[in-house]
Image 1 (cartoon, rainbow, N blue to C red):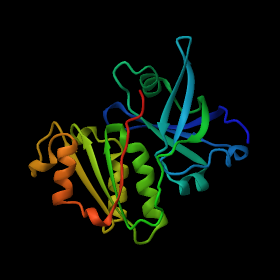
Image 2: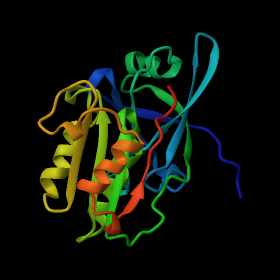
Image 3: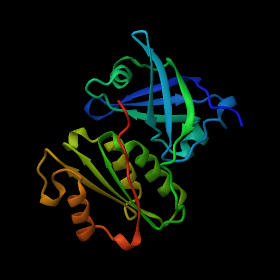
Image 4: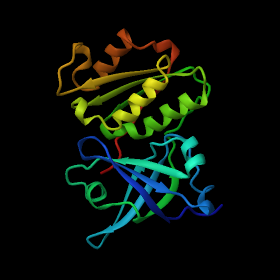
Length: 224
């Protein structure tokens, strides 16, 4: 088995997202199609030199396998973090046409039960990226599976990939449920305010989530 190595991929697009975040789309050439095939939930390791320093960071793939097979593109989402060397550089300096060293997909945050009838994902902030790929792939690859997303942010204006999530909701009205938890914006239902902690999760399970019918996902926020 060959040892994974970095490959130079061309940035096809840099698309703005909420709160200064960006979606980075990479074009994958034909000779690397097999190497960069992925499972929803996996990540890419990106590498560059910033101020003379070799910097590497992992960012989750947020696009679907169908998009990869049809358009030969991979997309990651990056939210600039305070003190984040790579995230701030990528959000402000990276542009279409640039080349970036990228390692083939890796990671074990993937679907364990492919035939699950109802999945529930919990995400906060930029942690939505792997969950977005899992949601879209779940909906595309099954005519009956359901998904409920519990997504925590400060305000609706800071919701990363909100447009993509709304598009999925419009497309799969009866199978996708979005539950937004906001820590700095009032909502009509007090239960949907605050942070996603253990007490909040239990409250949601007791009132809104059909716990006997779903397979749970969780999510970690990528490094800055």
